[in-house]
Amino acid sequence: MLEVAVIALRWLQYGGGVVLLGAPLFLLYSFKAADAPNLEWSRPTLRLAAIIVALGSLAALVAQTAVMAGSLSEAVKPASLSFMVTGTALGMAMVVRAAAALLGLVALVALKPGRALWSVTAALGLIVAASFAWTGHGAATEGPGGPIHLVTNIIHAVAAALWLGALAALTALLLRRAGPDDLAIHRALHGFAGLGTLAVLFLVLTGLVNSWFLIGPERVASIAGNLYGQLLVAKLVLFCLMLALAASNRFRLTPTLGSALETGQPSVAAMSALRRSLLVETGLGLALIGVVAVMGTLPPPASL
Figure 1 (cartoon, helix red, strand yellow):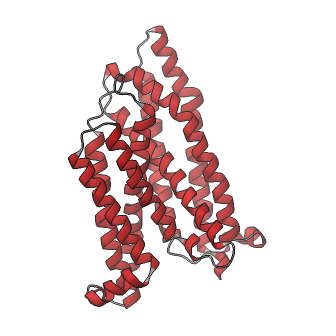
Figure 2: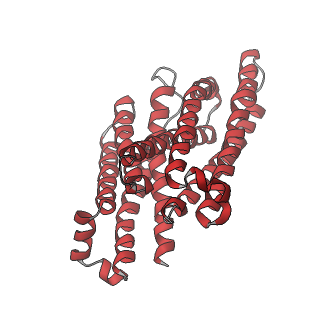
Figure 3: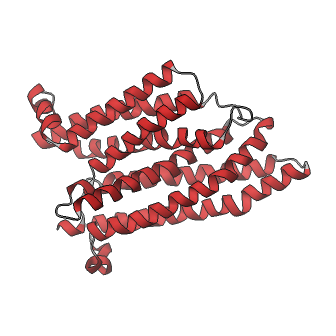
């Protein structure tokens, strides 16, 4: 039961973390004050993400302590929690993650929506995203390849947050759109294409490096022979499905919306198609980070 709780809490933290980094970055590079659409949804959404990360991290600290100590009653003792925080990188990372999320929540309450708030939130989201790598398999690699694997993991986590967090922001934007926002939304979709492509490139490259360390070239042929490898295959399938939808959005649906706006034709159908596509892509993203949450609790093939 505790293992299930650890996985669920990891999934919640990943979900909140990608929004806390990717959404404010999307707002920063997509909109200027003069032509921004209605962004009233952004601050409560980011507040919720910060709360999920903060509470999820603290709950995960207790759950992980219970797994190590053998019982929940033992885990809530100050001595057990103190050892977890001061004696393990995992516990320290969870505390740092919770602190960054709480600082983000304070900023989201104290500051008005705008570039200053998005910059502060994105910076704190960067700390949250990096902390996931700190507690992942990349931080456990020993020897001269250890720092390389850790840095690669951090880049992988940041790139994933950039893509998935921006995707969540785009989905919220289309769900709450008003007619006058269509031009600004189209520009945001068009502008995101380049950064989204860059994020995917980094995900592929860092994913290959991570696989080298966690699986090894000699085990690729037998990758489906254990649960970790099977989940990795499932992750790759979900990733490819998301890529297919992203390509459709970029090369078919977004140009269709642009043509409708240029010619003065109704854009309702084009917006509806984009909304459906983004909702499906977001659902696949949630499933993907669920798979990652499970994989983080399993020993990789290279360690067996």
